[in-house]
Structures are given as C-alpha cells and as structure tokens.
Amino acid sequence: MQLPDEAIAYNYQHLLTPMLEEWTPGAELRQQHFLAPAKLRDLTPRVLQVRSQVATERELKQVPQEMQPLDAGFIDLPQKLLDQHKKQGDASTLGRVLKLAERMRERVDRLVVLGIGGSYMGARALFESLKSSYHNDLPAKDRSGTPCIYFEGNNVDNDALHELFEMLSITCVEPDRREECWGVTVISKSGGTLETAAAFRAIRREMAEYYGLHAPQLKDLVVPITGDAGSLRSLCKAEGIADENMLPIPDDVGGRYSVFTPVGLFPAAAMGLDVRALLLGAAAMTRRFLEERFENNPVLQYAAVNYLMNTQCQKPIRVMSIWSRKLEALGLWYDQLLAESLGKQGHGPTPMTTVQTRDLHSRGQQHQEGMRDKVINNLVVKACVNPPIMVGMADRNEDELNQYNRKGLPDIMDAALAGTNRAYYDAARPTADILMPAVTEHTMGQLMQMLMLATVVEGRLMGINPYGQPGVEGYKRNMKEILKKAAQ
Image (tube, rainbow, N blue to C red; front, top):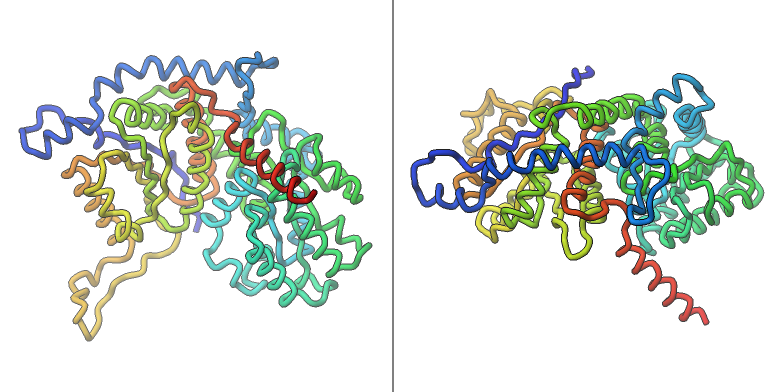
C-alpha cells in the first residue's frame, strides 16, 4: 500500500545550547560544543540574502567570467520537465526518457549502467532505496517486467568488469530470447572520462561478440546520455546510433546535480520507478526553498546549522547517520555532492556516511568518545513500507526476548535512535534529525533536491563556488599523461 507523502522536516533543536541549564560537567561541555541560538539568529538574515542570490543566479542568461561555472539549471529543472511533458508529450525530454525506458524494459532482462561520480551515484541511490534489496536475485516474473540493474564504468577494476562479463556470458546464451538479452546505457557529459570510456569500449566488444558484429542490437540496445557535443556523442553517431536513441544532459547542470536530468531519470524509469513522482517531490522542495520562511524551510535550516557547526563550533566532519540500510547509497551520493562542491580553497566539511544500527558497533565508540570534531545528522525514516516483524514469544527464552514479545523491529530501531541521541546529548555530541515520512519516489525527490539546494546555499555562505570540481580535473590530466608516456 502506498503510504501518504508528507513534507520532509529538519529537527535541529537538540543541538542548540540549552538555556538556563543547571551546571553539571555535561552542561559545561554542551555550552562549549553545541550551537548558541543567538548565532543562528544572527546568521538568518544573511541566509535569506543568500537565498535571494541563488534565486537570482538561476535566472541569469549570461554568466560573468568571475561566476563561472554556474550550473544552477538543476533548481528549476524538475518543474520545467513536468511542464514540458504536459505540453509536448512524447516529444519532450521526459516523454523521450519514458519511451526509451519502456522499450528497454520490453527488450532486455539486464541493463548495465555505465558512469562515474554524478553520472551514476544518483541512479544507484534511487535503485537501492526504492527497489528490493534482492531485485537482481528475483526471477524475471517476480520483477514486474523490469530488468536487473548493474552499475559499472565507475572504476578501472579489471576483475570487477571481468566478473560482470562472466555473469552475462553464463546467464545469456540465446540473444533471441528477451530473458537472455542485455543492454547498456552509457552516461558521460563530455565522453572524456577515461573510466567510463574504457568500460564502454569493452562493453561494445562484448555486445558484438554476443549479438553479432553487425547486429541491430548494437544500436537499439544502447542508450547514450551525454552533452550536445563531445567525444561520446561523436562516437555514438559514428557507430550509427540514432539521435532519438540518445538523451541530453543540459549544459547548465553539473554532474553531481544531475539526478533529475536523464542521467538519473532514464535508469530510474528503466527500473520501473515513478519518475513523475520524483520530479514532483523535487519541485515541491524547490518551492519551499524559494517561498517558505526560515522556520519552515529545511533547505535554509540545514545549510545554516551545518555551516555554523563547521565554522563556529569547529565540527569539520559531517556524519550522515542513516537509520535505514536501504539509504546507504543515498549517503554515498551526498558524500560526493558535499565533498566536490565545498572542498575547495583549503575549506569545506568532510562528509562521512554511517548506517545504523550496524555502525554503532564500529564507529559508534569514536563518535561517542573520540575527538569532538563531528556533527551528526540522523536520516530517520518514520514509517516502514512493510508490516513490522515482531519479536514474538518462544518456548526457549535463554535470549530473554520474551519480555519484548509485543515489540517489532521498528520499535527496536526507534529505541536505538532515541537511546543513541540521548547518549550523544549527555556526552555533548551534537546531533540533528532529517525526518523522512517514508521511502517513496516523492520523498526521495524532496530529499535529494533539499540536499543539493542546501549545498549551494552553504557554498555561497562560505564564499566559494559550489559548482565545478577543479581538483578532480588534476588527476584526470595526470592519468592521461602517464598513459601516453607509457604507450610511447
């Protein structure tokens, strides 16, 4: 049953310094390490100014040199895609995404997604959060007509790619059967990213061996997602892949902000997800960002609180503590978003993703008693999709669980969260909660847009450009130079 969607909220009150608290050693530490409410009040006017700045930036037609790159197109894109689809139907970008995804679902039982960084991490977060954890293990008849999904091209791990090819060669023997057909989507804005380009060349070779050197599947079962110009588009045209088989990446949207372009939407649609609901959730969060007061605006609250925790409270390590295993890839997506956007000019918080309660048994000790350099943002899902698994009664009670027989796993999770927050509060370790009503397409759209917008706002508060990644380009140049010298 589809749970009703609600608005995502950010509860940061318990990391504010308590007022008129009786002196204890713990209270003294909270005065030192928690955020003074006055600092947040003082920052609020500046945060509102930054919102106006970001709103203005997204409307610029010509970008001054000192502001480049300015990849603010993601802000309005969800609503634009929905509006365009309503007017143009199948001819719109969203219409083409849906049509190509439907064709891929009809023709293949396995889909390989090639991309690195922002070209795959958003799609992977959607896959892991919204599909069954065992999706790829299910028989085709139990996957509702959606293919198995595999992510590659995000490294140059020889053995990992070899194992993918080995799996495909074992499970796919008759290319005339849909159950044994596989396709690929390759995602790269320029096509110049070596990891993805090398994987795509190897994939094309495998496809030619399986389907035949001149088989139509080499064109029909490949969906490139790329920019208007670049080596990937040129290669695909030379291979005879039609323009209608290729999907665009907008020029004004950077890789790590691209989850609501075809970069994330096509894989999501191929998985059978409701991409309209994703876009509706993202558009709703954009409206809240632009229109709501600070008191009801999770984007501004999250940006302001975490900015102050980093700059005023000396908490440079930002822990995304996820209380749902299915959202771990969402945390990894946010790691990249934060690190590449704000890690510049010797500044920027360091992201870290943990999954609870698993990592309470590994990192929990350090977070409780280690260096006081962390702020913890709990990502809390308020409602499970499935009925609770109960502890129940048992004839043997050596495990002493019969006393909890009327409790379920959600109750245990709630108790663990409350107990952890209480322990951190007592030890003056600041925590806040992102409250997610349930894991649905609509709430994932809200959450991902909230984190992208908050990252941009925080970058502007820091006085740095949250777009572009000059540090990443350095390793790419060096890698290619080393390879060229070795080939001589």
